[in-house]
Image (cartoon, rainbow, N blue to C red; front, side):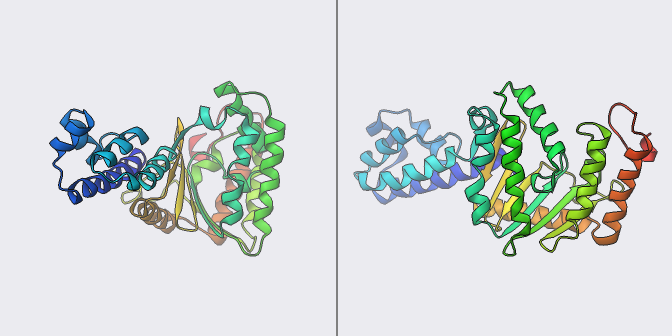
Length: 296
């Protein structure tokens, strides 16, 4: 599955456009570099996607080609690439509530949502208590201002999309997510009961990949969302990655399809959830991570 390669491929696509512009105007890389007062290797690195072309670089490039009119579109492309990778500290500097609100336009526009998670229950299926525990942990780890309750309210309000008749959700979870404790055991029992309720919603198709599944062809990967099969958002440790390049999106769609093939749905999925609930109920005073009987 791609992560930073998404940015590299986007830079390469832009570099190929700049190369085409250079060749269209009959310039060698050496001559363009001379006109821009650069080392020749810089042209090669830009054209091959090894480094990003800044707006200043693009203006110099188009001026050297005598085609300044091409600059605006190419600069827009470059800025789009820069926006693909947003560090959490930049996204959350105004608080968790603002970060939650930033995705609302995309959620309003999307009709088909696909989500895969190996770390946490996805936001639309979370209970208030589970969400509070997740966001409080983020605030503490990242040293953010304390607007957790406002952020929780925003995320809860966003869950209304589950009842909109025009929207569909295809969600695949690793079974291990059911046993990854976030908050007290009673929070997990409530959260898993919520999963049971959500699984019968008309808008939701829930699949769970059992821990014993053969992962030879498709191992667990980073948590991601796909919006209308045209944009992917990936949650990395340090940043939030947005993927729009068609080839990269196709790879995520293929990965989601493979993960979905491994998942149990319907009755077998409900059985896995019920087993996890029973496990938490059986050991409410146990500290640390809950686990299936084989791990106790």
